[in-house]
Amino acid sequence: MPRKIKVLIVDDSALVRQTLTDVISSDPALEVLGVASDPYVAVRKIAEEAPDVITLDVEMPRMDGLTFLRKIMSQHPIPVIIISSLTDRATEMGIRALEYGAVDIITKPQVSTKAFLEESKITICDAIKAAASATISRRRSPSPFAQPQTPYTVQPKYSADAVLSISPNGPMPITTTDKIIAVGASTGGTEALVEFLRAMPIDCPGIVVVQHMPEKFTASFAERLNGLCQISVKEAANNDSVIPGQALIAPGNRHTLLKRSGARYYVEVIQGELVNRHRPSVDVLFRSTAKYAGANAYGVIMTGMGDDGARGMLEMKQAGAFNIAQDEKSCVVFGMPREAIKLDAAHKVLPLNEIAPFLINKIQKG
Image (cartoon, rainbow, N blue to C red; front, top):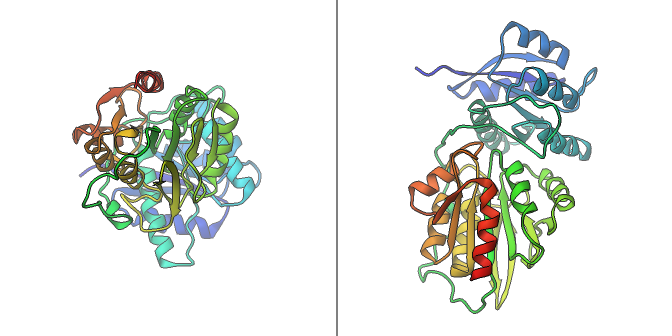
């Protein structure tokens, strides 16, 4: 029987510690090693037995979570998942935590509704399993966004059929030659997207990105990217046009679909079921891109746990799109690209630093 993943919960709220304990203990692959009300207690517990993963609140008395995270990453690196509320301050601290080496950010589970708690269980347990497979190195100074490694696949909850059905007539007839780039990423994707988007020129085709991330955090992430890139980056809003020189980041907790009206591409932002255990889902974006952009599209699938995006990327290929998957060596978690490669959905498999230059060259050559 595989060894259980041991988790240390660090949060100043007794209710949150108990809720997280119940959520984590409900998964047979996970075990709560201990709980700590603040980082000082956590340090003592880590000295007794090192956990495989730490869940960490960013707002705590005596020592804030960011200070604790920086100490962990510089002295004794352990995969850390930030468990955050949705306040503006907590959101900003959560984005900074990714820069300091946190593996992932998820929102605190709420016990107000059964459906919300069930979705929280899926998100939290999957994130811990992905973090446990991480290879974390010491950090002397922050670098743009996350960093773990190795695969961990999960079974899908719903497919993209839960949000949009496959068109029986195939892709929409193409009446425009405008190009579109659709990108999907998950664990480790925040750092990968920084490298990819910073390399894109101001005249690049319009880009739509699904990065698995909670609501509110995507707005802060897009704002941070906008300050780093030549192109403009913003969180997608319903009916936003997809235009050259701009990347739209799918908002957390909302599916984002590509649509077209005449020659104008735009996005539709909707609710809906979790697809492949995620909302937003890469499969939802890729399937809609296959339908509305067809051979005018380029697909990119990056580091991430599970198989979200693999089937959608295959539909893009069948509709005439050109697809690229990130290679195993440069991936934080080689789950999503691996599944796309297994389906023969990718035309090219490239290291992260070669994806943007290759794509730019191919688009320029037509």
